[in-house]
Structure formats: structure tokens, C-alpha cells
Length: 492
Figure 1 (cartoon, rainbow, N blue to C red):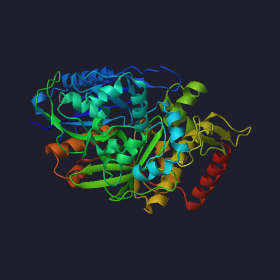
Figure 2: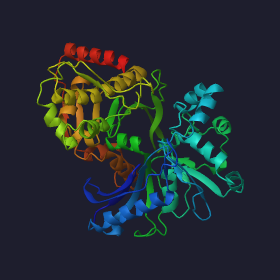
Figure 3: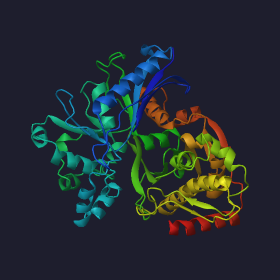
Figure 4: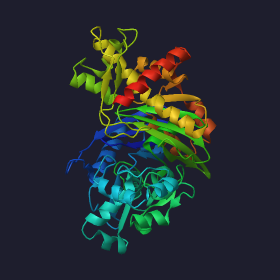
């Protein structure tokens, strides 16, 4: 009989559940999308009941399609959209309000007020984060100020809060566990990176009572056991937890300092392992917890490019260059280079390390000889070059040499883009066989907690590479491409 980990990957638009055995075989898979709620321009919400229903339906589908007996499930791992915040009643489980999603910008006014009061440096030093509506602390402040009777419910110790990991663990254990892990807590603007505990000063500034916050735990331990979960027996340990990008770093087995991963989704999400000490960023990157296993804490630097896969969708839908996004590789391979064309995909501004919200997309270097293939190739180059700038900033901040870059996400299947990434970075790119690395990271953490794998080395031996991409251009050519890119970015 196999030892099966049930891995829940609760994302922004849907939930994926994988049943993974000890040899990393995916024995079953379920997926459900759920509603996106937009009450006002710039506001994004989720119904907590919709999230939970999508989890239950995905679990049911995964089990039904697998042939796995539920008695084989030895542990549950959770990974999740990180900064989305919920508040619910500890007695009956009813939410007081829709979840406020990480994308929501409703707290921009609160953020500007905090900056005007001079708090930005304090928050950055304590939490490693920038003051931005992205993070869940200001969302929690907004909820406390705008949900009717919520302060009274908090005072009566009925109202409790948490990110999605906390909510799911609470539901899976029928309210027995009100916990979060260090990676999700590190995204709240409320946790001190050094002590890994809720910070009195920051909670006071945001008027958040610590009594409503979950207990901060490690990423791999038994938080509680299933109780009254439809389709699952009671008593399965919930024993692994990490926010999605940290789970992807763990799922890519980036266990050594200097190892990094990039997830190519709608945007590009990069994390680099910086070891046992948090590294303050001089380039406006985020300092965050990568994971805590047993008593050992590992930190990371994080940077995001707002646009990656969505640039390819723009060529498909906006400019109608092709019918399927996968066809960009064939089109771009029709030319040997971009013909001097540079595309800066700053359609919604520039993220790290520039942080220029006013920037907009740009195409330069057009000539009468330019055609669709040049623009397609330049778009892929733009995606890769954004990542180069982020990774160079990470190297500068950490004083670590980039060992290698592991890649995942939909666009990592594009061999041309991966070769460009290797060329422009000047280091090797490694793509795994299993590209659903967020779910894999949650499974690894739960497997450690359940004893399926005994240590990191045991996990690393199970991880399998699909393909490696080595740099294929010389330093002079690389420097010229980067110089042309930087000049274009200045104009965006």
C-alpha cells in the first residue's frame, strides 16, 4: 500500500488538489474554479464558502479519478494565495465579510496615510516588506474599520482572522486549529522577521488585536487532524503549509544558498534562497521567510515582474498574431534574432527593482524590415530580461552568486524562452519533470511532517529534471542585449 499525500493548492482563481505518492507519482488530480467578485473598481473579493467548496470538490474529483483508497492518505499539505485575508466566527465558522484578495487596492488610502506618518522604514525593517495594499495587514485594518459590529465581535473573542492557509486548516480540523505558518505570516506586515512572532508595535499601528490572529507555526508539523470533512476519514494529519511562492521554492528543492526559482505565470515570480539570515534589500526587493522546518529557518529574497504570460496573451488576443499561446515559439523561431526590436512589457507598470507604476508598455527599434516574428521574439526576450534585472538585484543584495535558476509555470514549457533566459542570465536553467511545483512543495512539507521523507536529502533524491538549458552566447553579446534593454526601460 502506498503512502499518499493530499496536496491542496488553493490559488486565486481556482483550487487544485493532487494525490502524490512517495515516488512523486501523481495518482489523482482535481480542479475547480470559483467566482471572482469585483464590488468596485480596483476591489477584488472571494466568498469564503466558494473557496471551501472548491477545495471539497477538488478533493472529491482527485479521489474519484485516482483509484486511491482514502485509507492510504497519510498527510495533508496546504499551499495558498498568500496575502488574501478572511475574518470568521470561531463558534459557527460563518465569515463576517468576503475575503479581501491580494490583488485588491482598496487600502491605498491607508497605505498613503501610513507613509505620510513616516512608518515605511519601520515596517520595512521589521517585516522585510514595502508598505503596499498588496499585503494583508492593511486589509485587516480596513475590515476592522468597515465591517459592522466587528470590533465588538473581536472583543468578545468570537471573531478570528487569517490568510487562506489558516482558514482551510480551521475548516479541515473543524475549528481545532487556528494557525498559520511563518511564510504566510511573513506577508502580513505584522510579523517580525527576526523573532517570527506578531510584532506589538506594528499591530498597534494598524489597530489589529493580537487576540484575533492565529498562532504562528513552522511549515512542517502536525497542526491538527481532519474532522467531519466530506469525503475524508477523521484523523488524517494536516502537517504541511507554505504560501504559494515559498512552496514553489521548496518544491524545486532550492535548499542551498544562491539557488533560485522563477514561476512563469501571468507574471514572473522569483525567489532566491539566502540562507539562515534575512537579507535587507537595497533594491526594493522583498525579504521574506522561505520556510521553517523543525527549528531551522531559511530566508529568501523575492521579486516579481507584473507581466510574463499575459504578454503572450496580448499578442494572441490584442494583436492576433496567433490562435494559441503555444504558437509563439514557432513564430519567434522564424527569425534568428529580434532585428533590433525591444519590447518592454510594462502594461501595468514596472515591478521590482524599478517600482514605477506610471510606466507603460513600449516597442522600440522598429524598421520597415520588422514583421510579426521579430515582435514575437522581442516579447519573449522582454519577459526574460525583466527576470535578469530582478535576479541581478538579488545577487547584489545577497552577495551570493546565482548557482542556477529552476523554472516552472506554464511558459516554462517554451524552450526558446528558457534558452533566452539561460543566455541573458549567463547561468544554467533547469526545468523539472513536475511543473506543478507549488503543490509539490506543499506535498514535500507534509511528507516531512508525516514521515514519508525523512529529510531534505531524501526529498532531493526523488526530484527529477526534465531538461537543462546552458548559456549559448558570449559575454559581449549578453552585455549588448542588456544595454539595449536598459535604454528601452528608461523610455517606458
